[in-house]
Each structure stands twice: as C-alpha cells, then as structure tokens.
Length: 84
Image (cartoon, one colour):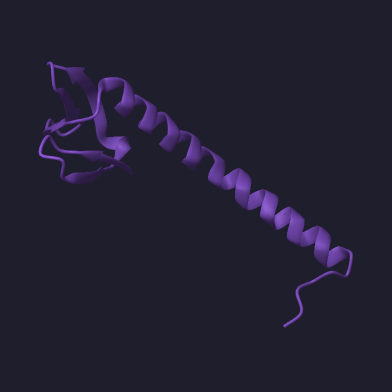
C-alpha cells in the first residue's frame, strides 16, 4: 500500500499492486487494473518512486524474517535465550 494525495490534499492509501498505468495529463492520472481512475497531486516520478519503495519493502520482508530467525537460533544455541 502507498499513500498519495488527491488534488484537494486529502490522503488516499492505494494498493500499488492494482496500478496499471500512471500518466501526466498534466495532473497525474492513475489507472487501476479494473479501469478505475484517480487523479493525485504527486508527480508521475513520485508515484513510481513510492511503488518501487513499496516493492523493495515487501521483497525484503521474507529476508528480514529469515535474518531474525537466524539470530534467534544462534542465540538459543549459545545459551543466550531471552529469560522471562
């Protein structure tokens, strides 16, 4: 999900997976895969950057979870488990 702003400044949270096209008309027009359209205040470049950041974030989630699990496993093996 990415946060953008309608032309009146009102924030809108959009599922980045549903974006089909982003155009400058001159306002930024987003067309979703179901053909719904949304005009936003951000530039085409800003929308693309937010989608890329979102993709990086979701792509790193499994890697981060594996890293945390690995750290916990090493701590358990070394006898440094959290004590309640």
